[in-house]
Image 1: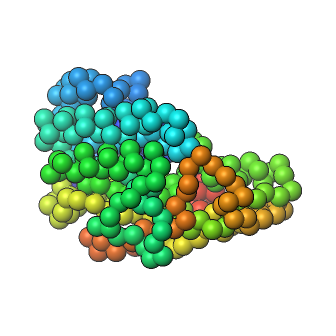
Image 2 (image 1 turned 180 degrees about the horizontal axis):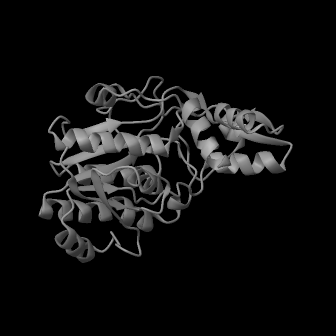
Length: 290
């Protein structure tokens, strides 16, 4: 295949961005530009336009986001700046150089009241500041006719702070931990998501992937309790995981009780075999062990 001139990764120091750094070492067909706030402040419109004009990337993958779900309730302006306003800057920059924009979004755009997997065309109904700013960011991204929008959920990796790492720390230090069992979704290994996005880029470059919204998580369904239990078992910890209802673990934000995403669209579009969440967890833990 022809070499893609440049793929710009924003938020390159986060979980997903770091997984792209790993993939880049084994992807000769792609040339990556890795940026985080020190290299490119995407909340600065003139900086974005200038950067795009200088480097003229073929694809922009926006991995940057305000993801502190609870903190967003007291910092709505900061959440909106990164999750919506910055997206409008990236859209303007992508338009100026004709780049494809891949915007990453979240299950939090839904209210979690369904009992069957959410499809791409289901009505968004966010119930938190984080969810609302991400939903508004989606609207902005989709005003551009070269946008691929990918919703994901329960992201974890060997990088940064996430549920897996928290449970491994707790499991090594404590005899038990209480974890909610009435919030259901699908854990997603960020490395699998990064590989899928590269597949989307390849397919879109050949004209075989329509623009629009796609859902991607690993396969399977579980609660946070199930996820934590599997982590403890794989790690060989004796820490007991106690299931509790979410009402006994109050947070500033109401979490979706059901956030399973339907992946049939992306599976068919890419002829994709999606790994089960337990498989992804095993591979990530093997990486953490070194």
